[in-house]
Length: 84
Image (cartoon, rainbow, N blue to C red; front, side, top):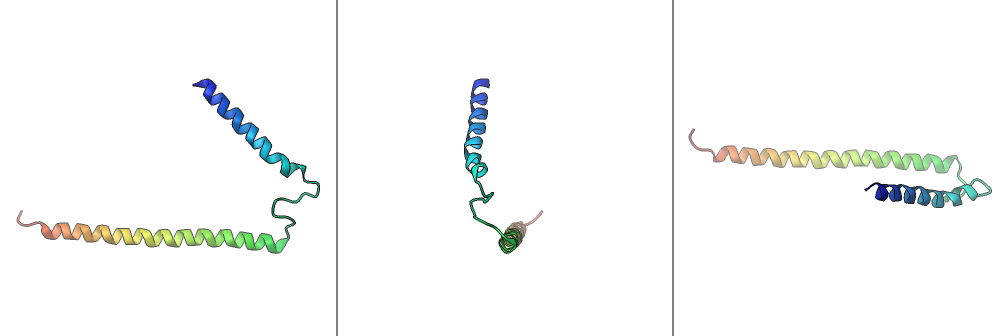
């Protein structure tokens, strides 16, 4: 069990080093997206903000729909009860 964990950790570290080498080897300091300016950064941050707002709105709509279905099911079960 320990050997498997050690191999997994070493593989993760080696993969991380292999992936980061091209980013560190760039002479101009540019990333994969090329040269960035204020406009690019602003639009990226706006996209991230809109994504999270959209996730919250969609999650709220889904939750409210599920709550309505649950309440309708509970009401139908209560209407079926007869007697004591």
